[in-house]
Each structure stands twice: as C-alpha cells, then as structure tokens.
Image (cartoon, rainbow, N blue to C red; front, side, top):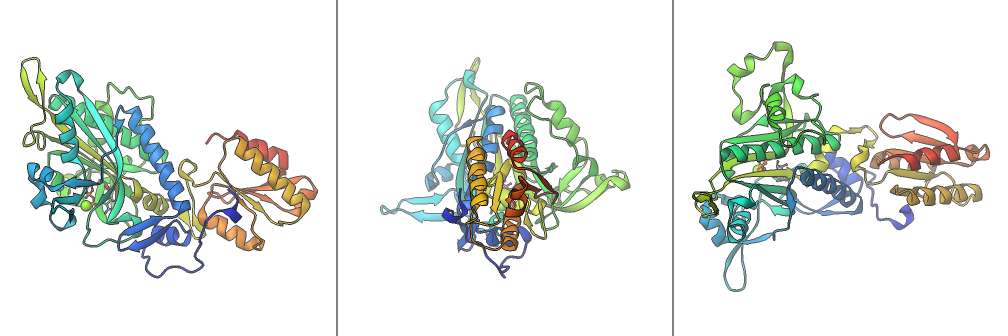
Length: 439
Ligand code: ATP
Ligand code: MG
C-alpha cells in the first residue's frame, strides 16, 4: 500500500477525551473514530489489525475443534423469554420493535440463539461433543462506555458454545477452550493469566477470566507471580489430554476481585504475591443445564433423553486492540507485535523525486509484496523527521529507510521498532532478510 493512496488520518494533537494510552494512540493513529458514545467506525489501519486478531482467533479455535458459523445481531425477545433473561438483563440490553410491533433486541451475547439452533438440528448423543462459535458484533448499553474500544457499547466478540453429554465431557470441552485461549493470547504477544471469576448473569459454577496485567485495567486482580510468565502450552500439546494444562495453572492462586479470598491469598509466599490491575480479554464458563433445561435442548442417548451440558467462551476481539497497545507501546507510539501488526514493513523514502531513491523503493516495494509482506510505502513529501515520527507512531515492526546518502554506497537502513536498533547494510541483504522473514 502506498501511503499516498491509503487513508490514514493521523492526529497531531493528543485528543482530550482519551484518558488512557491505548485510546489516545488509536485516535492519533487514525484507527478508529467515535460515531456515538461507545460506538466506533473502524478506519483502515484499525480494521487491518482487527482482521489480524480475528484470524488468529479463528486459527486457534479451529485447532481446538470449534466450528465457525454466523448468527445475526438481531434476535427475538421471545427467545430470551424462554431462558428468563429478557427481563433479567436490564438496561444493558438494547430493545427494538420492528414495524409489526414485534419485540426484538440487539444481541449482547448468544446463549439462547445457539441453544435454539442446537435443539432444532442435533438429535443424537453421537453428534457430541459439539463446539460452535461466531465472531459477531454485540451491543451492550454500558452505563459507562469509556477507554475507547476497551469498553464500547458496540463491540466485536468471539463467542463459542460447547455441547456435551455430561459434566465430565463438558469439562474436557472447557479445558480445550482454556488451552486454546492461552495459545491465542500468547500469539498476540500477550501474557494472559486465567483467574477464577464470578459467573455473573450468564450463570454457572466454573468460570475463568483471562486477564492482561495493566495499570489501566478496570479490574483489581490477585495472583501468584509465577502464572504471569508461565509459557502457553503451544499447538502441539496433546489435545485429548489437557487436564494437566488446567491443573498446573489453577493450582496457583489467581482470582478477580469478586472471587478474591484474602485468607487463601495470604498462603501464597509473600514474594510471589501479586496484586495488580488487569484487563479482561476473555471469559469462559461452564454452566451445565442452565439454558438447555428451560429451552429443552436434549438429545437421544443410549438409555433415553439427555439434557445437554453447555459452556460458553468469549473473547473481546475489539477490546484486544486496546489491550495489546496498553501492553506494547513507548513514548513515540504503538509497538505492534509482528503477528497483529497492520503492516509488516514501513518503507520510508527519504527523498521522493530522487531517481535512485524512487527506483530502489519501487524495487523493494515489489519484492516485498511478491514475498507476501504487507508493506506501507511512505512516498509522501513530508520531511524525514515527520516520516520517522509518523511511522514510529503507527508502530509497524520494521522500517526500511531509503535515503540518497546511503544508497550512493549501496546501503539502506533497517530499524526495528521494538528495540529501536538501526542497522545499515547493503540494500540487497536487507531485502533478502525481509523477504525471508516468516510472518
Ligand atoms: P466486563 O466485566 O468487562 O463487562 P463481561 O464479563 O460482561 O465483561 P463477557 O460477557 O464475558 O464480558 O464477554 C466476553 C468478552 O467480551 C469479555 O471478556 C471482554 O473481553 C469483552 N467485552 C465485554 N464487554 C465489553 C465491552 N463493553 N466492550 C468491549 N469488549 C467487551
Ligand atoms: Mg460486562
């Protein structure tokens, strides 16, 4: 992508409405634009990152055996009356009437709808376990939308739902999601700690929130320090045998404020006690028959009818952009982990119009694109200082800097955004290095 043909409305000033760094940087980088309180338009740079995050989520869900579908945003109120949540949900639910005065709502979550799909289509226990998910916009009329995409009213969520014949099988499904979440967040460069959590209005008795530690987090959290740096199990874990993944982590203390027990926390060695603030990026629940019973989601078993055991598993896809930026930035701007960066390489032409610079940049642009690298070619007429500042701001992992002086000797510069390191090297070597990079 040539910057001259891209749409990147950067802000020079810090927007006064942004209280935390991720919100400030997302606005300054032209990633999002607020259209109403807690409702954002995703501008091209933000949309690219959103798609990258979605892709990682999709790949890890597939690995764990979850199957993607897509449910609508609008739902019938009557469906929610079946579970009893239509009245219970309160003011967070956006209620709508169609032209026939039928009561509808903009989905804040999809337990009822997936249960309806299940009961209408799955008849036999032989079709279980089943895990279905979608990535869809949700609406919750939050009392205090704030911090940009972190607490929006309209936000993108991945929500998966598992169906099993009994509690033991449902726990295995839970462990698969638990493991998939550890891998998913690790691929985004995040250290997410699973913490015992309150089950809230979704209900049930087994639940974990996945928390990123950050001073700007909305939740107070308490955990054993070793959990923070515990490596993710990785893709090659034995997916049929995941209890140890769960046990290794849950044997160490970790709880959100609602579930915090100071007496138990006191048993953690003093130098391992961590009390901090955190951002919730995912939340998983096992809730058994809470929906399947009132909504009659049953299958035929070998000895008669079985009411299925369910769980639900959410990831705040749009919130993750904010969380990643909170975890990875410096005074100059965002530092994207390579896995979710909007572009792989920023190609900076220090003197557009100079024949040698233009030719080298065109060559690099083509070679990198051919190699499947996503390149933002900064071909603008801005002075070099302004180019460096804006490329640092938007945080592309690699900057390939082409200027007349270096080029006269056959050299270009390669800057690593994360470390700030700059290396001067022959043009062809740098190109070879960048095109060989596995993204
Ligand atoms: P919170 O306690 O932050 O309100 P929740 O427990 O209500 O979250 P869930 O219903 O478990 O959230 O939703 C799954 C995920 O969706 C959360 O872990 C979070 O990452 C994300 N999420 C929830 N509410 C919002 C919101 N208002 N804006 C952005 N993301 C959200
Ligand atoms: Mg909430």
